[in-house]
Length: 247
Image 1: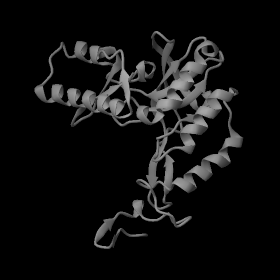
Image 2: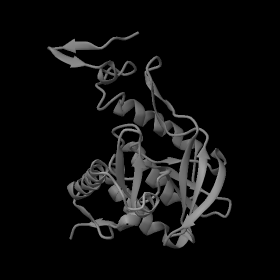
Image 3: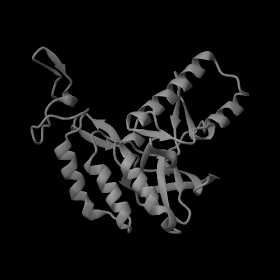
């Protein structure tokens, strides 16, 4: 097995060493820009959303990715099981579902490549009357996808289309819900540690949005998704439609 090494007295983890396939330097953990881009290009022939704009959007994110899950995928609807309606928003309906393959974000140390994470619960946000709002929504995501894929914002995996021909955004499912729901379940009582962690998560998300020269014009508890882990709590900013140019 390939070992970590020192180059010029600098520690180099094997996941960041030169790509074993092409010999070029990886630009992030396990990510060879040329090899990943070529692999995604080869797959362009094997999928389509049946909408030119969506295809171009997904390809744009894949060709400009700099790390795993820094891009969108076209995910056929049959890849989901146990689809269940959970609510509605201004743009359409929200469902939970089990994505059988899961995102491609597990590093296979032996094969030195990224592998699927396996079954995971996701949220499907359906865009009602998709054809009427598609162009503006796609242009927004295409322009800001680097900002939207920040670790401080709600994770977005890709796009699918339901049996009614409405497109759906595939996102991580946050079991704790939004901030309002989280506070209701805890009767509005949180420890100072949790309050600080939530505020730090919001601050990180806003910082990333502002670094990209954008603003979030409608930030409130309903747009803050809570990730409650065993050792910490985090807040992720959502509602990508409200991220606009800062002018």
